[in-house]
Length: 443
Image (cartoon, rainbow, N blue to C red; front, top):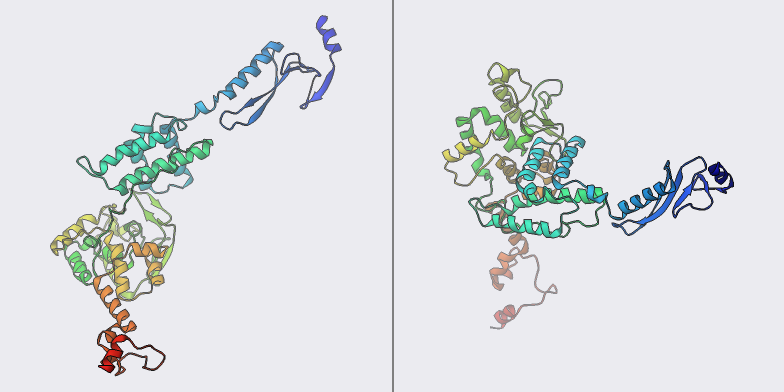
């Protein structure tokens, strides 16, 4: 009966969309007209320093129970309980890799395998057990100092390019965590990768490319020693396409990539590992390349020589013995055999096809825009990166510059210059005489 009188005597107001008692029954606690309580309080977020409101209707039995809930919630937010539930680097990195695979931002099997390998071997032993918000700049610098020893110590000395690949995975993972969880600190911000200026991938001694004069002998020997790979190598040198773009080419079927009657090659897929193929190229550029009759003839001959069975039945232009995709390393041994047979001492890998193409194209004076349309390079910078200008090109080019500048005539002295040999500027045309000219005329 007492409770009924108390409820009747209570003045009710509408506030925060609830009908509640005009005055709190305890600090931050108001009685709700239909039963229960409404609690309201403020708390400062320890991560941002901003104040947030706590407002909730509770079916608590007593005002003390409602007040206890409000205090517990304020304490939880104040101490940052939510921050302490963030995942470890190991859990987050693995889940990030899975998400990238699902959303297509990490399409190729090779990229996924490389990502997982770097995590397992080089990052998780150091960072795996730490929560993403616990990793400090000092932790990253300490790891960097340890891996730096691998540049000069141990049985195998690593290239800074390789170690920078490990750092790239660490940096991209932590950058993603910082953005996803709105962390205040980024432990990799401002930390630079290792300098690679003293570790060039290609050098004058090791360009991983054939000079134009070496091409014919290399292809003849490839035909003699490894005829099953000859057509693929010819196409590689002729177009500069990556082996990963050559392996999935289809010669027949509803989606054939070589249009025999038109003499056109469609480059639109990339093979990475096992039977997995991306329906795009490495740089996401689809190409249509018009092939000359001579190259079409070589490819037709190759198809005609395929043995009966799985290879002949396959839609692929360059199938393996079972009719499937050739492996990523299929050309390594043929290149090694041919190189040794010809006595070539420089290192040559299948990538030499892409690099040599650039030099071959310049030798026959193909315009750069046409060269890029064939090889698939998106920028002049990448085209230059894959090029190895020969000394003959430089010498010939400089000779033309010297002729244009008149350096040869200048070196012949004033007597011959006055004869007007290829000089183009006559005396008396406003050109001041040199001291040597004046001395010769008065001497």
